[in-house]
Length: 85
Image (cartoon, rainbow, N blue to C red; front, side, top):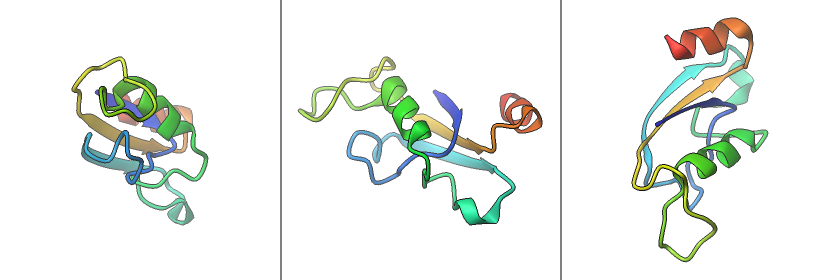
């Protein structure tokens, strides 16, 4: 499952074992790699999509047992289009 957003907190207990790959399409070098999420939105969305089920923490994501492709974007039209392609 792919998430195009502000990155993902790679240390989050619901997501840390789910990240299969990352792509950085955010041109701002101060924003950090895709495995950081300064805004928290990407981590929230990734959790809804792919949080680990049955671990007694938080919730179960919609994609039971899925892996994540984290695509960090600046959310401009061109960045999102590049991520989809």
